[in-house]
Length: 141
Image (tube, rainbow, N blue to C red; front, side, top):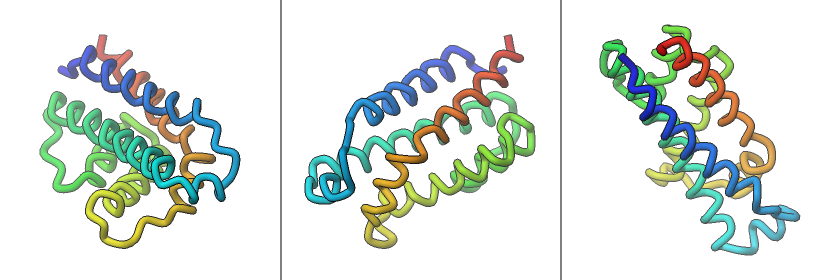
């Protein structure tokens, strides 16, 4: 049985981080690029948001007894398979895991243009994920 209270807490944490990013009005890419504190802060908050989404997925999968994912990307494949999230949300989440891997493991130099683009245009992806998770846990009551 899914620990609904835990998932709700994680969703609140996810939304809090999203609000922090949305509350910071970065005027231009030039401003973003020229301020290491700013671009590192945005990058770190995005990383945390991806980690929260991964944690949510892991908790649901474990609580439902759906096996043990072999990777963070597989978490979202399993959630898709069990119709917890849509294929669209799963694809977006897997892309964010790829971004997170670059940031955390430094597989390659982090592209500040990509970080800025996520900040400007992709924060809504996290809300889409959150709403789909909420629909799922609403059925668990």
